[in-house]
Length: 520
Image (cartoon, rainbow, N blue to C red; front, side, top):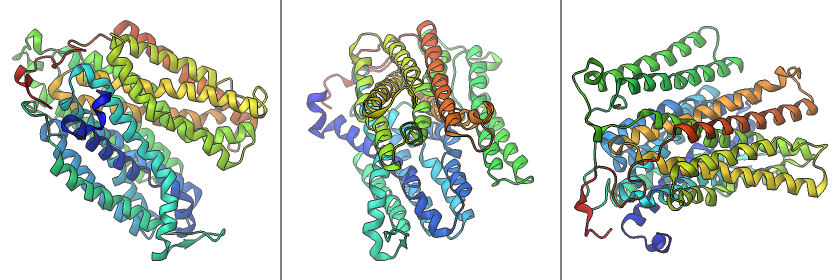
C-alpha cells in the first residue's frame, strides 16, 4: 500500500481527499486557542470568559459525534462530510463578526459540532480499503488529519498578522493581528473545499453498494443483552454534558435559573437517544425478530473500544492542554520554550497513528496489538509521573523528561490508530454509528480527565491558589491516574476483546465478491 500511496488514483485519491477534509475541520475547531489572548484584549474579556469559550468549544462535540454517526450511515460520507464542511463556515463567520461575549459563546457552541467530523472519514476510508489494509489507511486518515490542530496553532497568528492590512488589533508589543479575518478565512476555505469534496469523492469504490441500516434512529444491536449494554454505555454521554454544565455554572456563565434548564436539556438528550434506540430495536425487544448467527455482532466489542479511546484520545486531549504549563513550572522555562517542548507530544501523531494501524495490519492479531499498545500507554504515563523538579534537573533532566513524553505519546497515538483499525470490522452497515460512539467516548475521557486535573489541587489541600509544589504533586497524581486507567483497560482488552472475523481478508464479512477484477 505504501508504494502506491502517492498515486492519487482510486482509493488513494479518496484517502487524501478525506484526511484533508478532517484536517480542515480540526483547523476550524482549534482556531480559538492561538488567538485567545488577542480576542481577549480586543473585546475586553476576562480570563474566566476565555475559559468559558474553551469549554463551549467541546460542549456539543459528544452528542454531535453520535448524531453525525447516524446521519453518516443513512446519507453516506460524501454528502455528510461536504455538508459539515459547508456548515463550518457559518459559525466561523459568526465568531469573526461577534461584538460581545454572548455572540462568541453562541458561535463557539456551533463550532463544537465541527469537532465531530472525524467520525465521517472512518466509514469513507473503510468503504475504499480492504480489511487487510484498513489499519494503515485509517491511521493515515486519523494521524494526518489530526495535525490540523497543530497546524492551526502554528499558522493562525502569522495569518492574522499577514491579514492586518485589512485592519486589526494592535497589541502592546506593537504586533497588529486581524483575528477576525483569520477565523473567517478558515471557514471560507472549508466551504470551498466542501464543494471540491462533493464533486471529487464517492461513497464507495467501483463495484460496491453502500450498505445502509434499515433504521438510523439509534444503533441496531442483535441481542437483548446488547440492548441493555447500549443503554448503559450511553449514560456517560449525558453525564459529561451535565459535567460541562456544572463547569459553566462554576465560571459564572450559567446563573441559578439557567443551570437547571441546562441540566434538563442534557437529560432530555438521554431520553431522546434512548427512545431512538428502542425504536430501532423494537422488534428485537418484543421478541418478533431473531438475528441469524451470521448477522450478529457483540456490542461488548464496541464498549471495549469506547474504553480504549478514553485512555488514548481522551488522555491525549487532556495532556496536550496541561503539558506546556507542566514543563514551565517543572523546569522554570519560558512559555515559548515550554510550549515548544510540549508540542512534541502532538507532532508524534503524524507517525505514531499510522504506525499503530500498520502494527494492527501486519502483526497477525489486532487484539494483541491493542493490548500491548494500551500497556505501553499505561507504563508511559507512570514514567511521566516521575518527572519532578527535584528529580529531573538541568538540560539532562529536560532531555530525559522529553524522552518519557515522546515514548508515551507514541503509544497513546498508536493506540488510537489500532482502535480505529478495529472499528470498521465490527458491523459493516453501522460503522458510522459505531465510530460515532467510540469517538464520542474520547471526548468523554478528555472532559473527565481535565475535571480530575482541575480538582486535584483542592483535594490535596492547595486551596483556590495552589503553590507550585501543590501543582507538581497534582500533576504527578494526574499522570498516575492516566497510567493506572490505561493498564486497567489493557487487561480488559486481554480478557474481553475478540479478534474480528476476516481481519486480514480482501473482503469484509458478508461482502459480495463483485469486487473481483475491479481495479481501484
